[in-house]
Image (cartoon, rainbow, N blue to C red; front, side, top):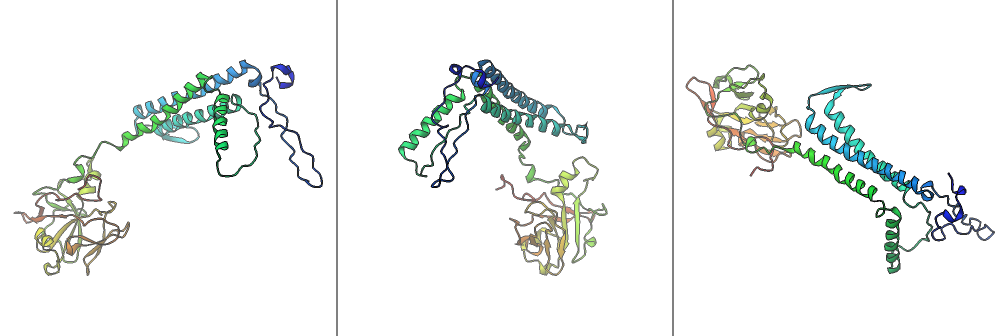
Amino acid sequence: MSSQDIPEENLPAEQGDAHGAVKVADEENPFADPGLPPHEHRIQDIDERAAKRSERTVALLFTVSMLSTIAFIASYVAIPVDRSIYVWPIGHISALNFALGGTLGLALFCIGAGAVHWARTLMSDVEVADERHPIEASPEVRTKVHADFKQGAAESGIGRRKLVRNTMLGAMAMVPLAGVVLLRDLGPLPGTKLRHTTWAKGKKLVNMNTGEPLRPADVAVGSLTFAMPAGLDEHDHDFQKNIAKDALMIVRIQPDNIKSKKSLEWGHEGILAYSKICTHVGCPISLYEQQTHHVLCPCHQSTFDLADAGQVIFGPAGHALPQLRITVGEDGYLEALSDFEEPVGPAFWERG
């Protein structure tokens, strides 16, 4: 049905003079304004039944958005992280990622599609022509803006189309819940786990390459040896979590070259044990200069002086490498005297 099939008295009244008279080009004004084409009414402007159908369509889209948000939350809670499914033609993918992406995408798409369908079928589509005005907002302009806003709100039908309004508000209110649920992955709080390692009094220092306990004679002057606490097995379920805090660098420096009295006292005959974890972002340190006793982090070039209590001498690291107090046990092997006295690795918000 077109507007030509409707009696003149049933057509909505035109608003303003947006479709004013067409100006004719002449010698003085060869580029005259041709004006706007005649306005054609939509079926929703003419037939209330068509408007109701559009209203129900918009409400359906918003309702599907709400259901999709609920499905997003349910998928996040119910689907295991390690479950995979086969999706043609992609192949095997994570079931959780597929469900979260599909439900959240559908929720956002339905809100957008509902808003577009509402604007194109139910809101006013009358073209409005207005003269250019100065950037400065005069009182008359402000009054006009308020009047236009009120008119637009009235024409949108948001007060009269309660079903559309309520379902739209419901969909927009529920979509942020998807982001709130994702906050669960920020926890639980670390508590004191970042302040402690598995090092303790009596724990032997084990060579990470050979798996054998270290004796003082095994550490030569100028060498760099990597160690871990005895009892730590790479086949353990939590090995990676523990080694990320427990890894040590063992160096031997002539006692006369050790600048820090504390470092000398915490070592044994010039053998010093430092955390291998860089205090910038946690990269493993592995580059050692024998002549200067400096170690370099390969990630961002933070440099530490092992002869001076592991102090930072270059780079973005914020604090010195923690040192582990060591001694020699009755059986002649190197062992720890305690845990680290400060947290290893990068700084964190609870540290103080």
